[in-house]
Length: 150
Picture: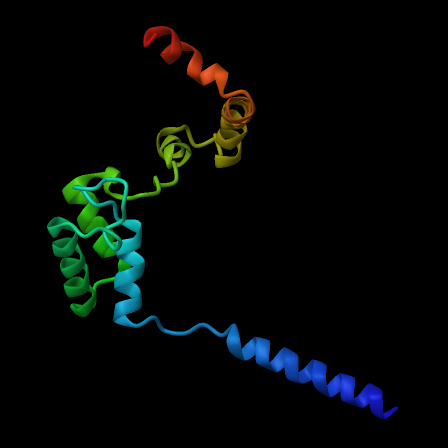
C-alpha cells in the first residue's frame, strides 16, 4: 500500500514539475530580438540569418530590430517593416501561400473556402510527388544541367 502512495506522490510531483516548466512566459526584449533576427536573411551574406552574420548591414539590422522592440512594436509590425523595405525575400523561410484566401475574396458568394482547397489539393499532391521523385532520383533534376554544361 505504501509503495502505491509513493508512486502516486511521485507521479503528482512529476506532473506538477512538467506543468510548471511548460507554462508560457513573457519573452524578454533580447529573446524577441534574437527570434526576429533569426528569421531575417542577411542581404550581404544571403545564406545566413541577420543574427548569425558578421556584416555591417546585418549589425545595423539587428540594432534596428532591437530599437523597434524597445519602442514596443509587435513582432508582426517589425516583420512588416522589413517586408515593406525588402520584400518577402528578406525572410529565410518563405511565407505561407495565401492564394486560396485571395481567391475566396474574389470568388462568388456560393463558393466556400473548402471548395477552393479541394480544387488546390490535386496540384499540391503533384508538387509533393514531384519532390519525392526528385529526392529519390536526383538525376531527374540534374539531367538538363549535365547536358548543358558538358
